[in-house]
Image 1 (cartoon, protein in one colour):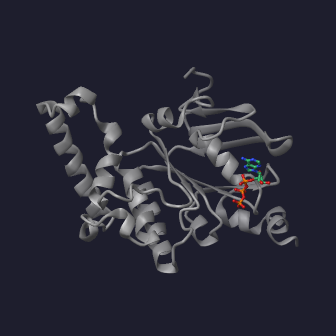
Image 2 (cartoon, helix red, strand yellow):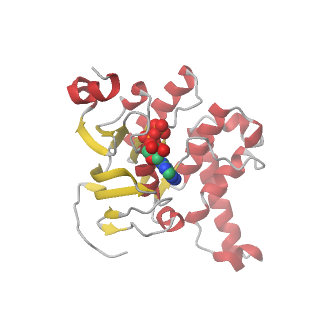
Length: 258
Ligand SMILES: Nc1ncnc2c1ncn2[C@@H]1O[C@H](COP(=O)(O)OP(=O)(O)OP(=O)(O)O)[C@@H](O)[C@H]1O
C-alpha cells in the first residue's frame, strides 16, 4: 500500500470511482467518504450500483478508474484477505456462516487474524499456540455473551434460522475488532423484531468505537446512520444526515418518481 493522501477525519475514501461491465457503465465518478467513528449509509433504487460499489470497497471487484484510500493509503488493488488483515471486514446479503461449525467455533474462527503464533506452532500445539487458543476462546465467549448467543453456543450454525445466522455472522465479524465493518443489506431475511435487535446492536458497536459502512434498502435501519449517501444510476445524487436525505426532492424523485 502506498501513502497517497491523509485525511484524518475519513477512514475510507472513495475517489472518482468508475466501473462498467461489458460496455455498460455502472458507476460514474463516485466520490464518497466514510468518516472515522461514524455510521455511513448508502441507499439507492434497484440497479443503482450499490452492490458494485460495496464490492469495490471490500475488494471483490477492482474499479476501472479511481482509487480507494484506507487510512490514507491506496487499497484499490489489495485482495479481500489483505483488507481483512488490515481491519476492513464485510458481511454478505445472505449470511455466510461456517454451517458445520458450532456458533462458538464460528466466533473462534473470527479471531483467527488476531493470532500471532503461526501455522507450525498451531500444527504442533506448542505452548505459544495453546495460550493463543485460550485467549481466542475467552474472546469468543465474551462476544457470545455480548451478542446474546450464549444459549446457542454449541449448536451447529447451519441448523439455525437466518435471523440467528445473521447475528452470528455479525458477531464473527466484530470479534476480530475490525477498524471498519461493511454491512451489505444486513436486515434482509429478518423479521421486525430481529431488525430492531440488529439496529440496537449496530448503535452499540458504533458507540463502542466501530466505524460502520451500511448498505441497505431498509429505511428504518438506515436511520442509525450519521451520514447517508444516495446513489442513483451510478452517481451520487445527494448526501447528508438522514432527515435531510428524506426531505431531499432529488431523492424523493429517484425513489418515487415524484
Ligand atoms: N458482474 C456483472 N456483470 C454484468 N452486469 C452487472 C454485474 N454486476 C452488476 N451488473 C449490473 O450493474 C447494475 C448495477 O447493479 P448493482 O447490483 O451494483 O446494483 P444495486 O444498486 O446493488 O441493485 P439492487 O438494489 O437491485 O441489488 C445492474 O444493471 C446490474 O445488472
